[in-house]
Image (cartoon, rainbow, N blue to C red; front, side):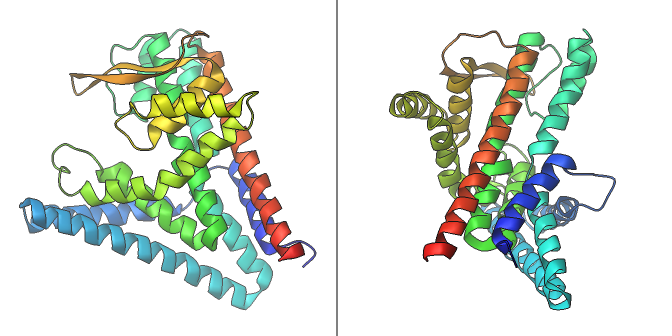
Length: 319
């Protein structure tokens, strides 16, 4: 081949995600993951109510889903490659693109921004409630925009950089396994009933897997700054105040890059929760900032794919 298969897969998956994203009218692998997770959690919740039983069930579900997803993707690519190398490469591209969430995040943000810019707060709140866990019934325009930027920033590692990180290590199958664990965490990784114990292992596993990509995401943004070291220190200072081991890093990096402040008071099922403040107040939180956060996500994706292509070509030329 005139171009490295790995390079072709990286570029092709990025292009496919940008053009199509996740067309939910088609079969999508995450739908299958969701169905398996729903079935698994029902079995675990009915099998035993003791904390150790649910923790064990959550661990088995995490390992089984991760290994099963890896094996599924590997087998599909192997069979397709056995038919023709280009078919295998094409399937590799499709599977990796299904792990990326750039287009999906843009679509979700636009579904909220359109009614918001038309002055229809009720519709904007309803649309936002589909994507965030906080209560949205009484949010104003600033709070809606803050929620959108926080969602984009929080999902940049697990929806963009982490899949690419694992793809560079082990191709689409490893990225697919990560996506499965991340999806499981998003469905059961809550510290509330009925997932208090069931979600323990999925949440911790996802935290461990995302730890390096989250910090590399901050490093990617630091390299865009006039003073990368000062930027890193500011992000680290803010992130350490956040209870999440990963999302605080990416949210702090977005806040400092965009010149805004994130965090503050949220309500979850009527319970007020004060989140640590990230970044420094500067620009107003408005739809322009939300779109700037989406542009920033695209820049991060381009940096990562460009770095991946460069590393791969370097190995092939001098390795």
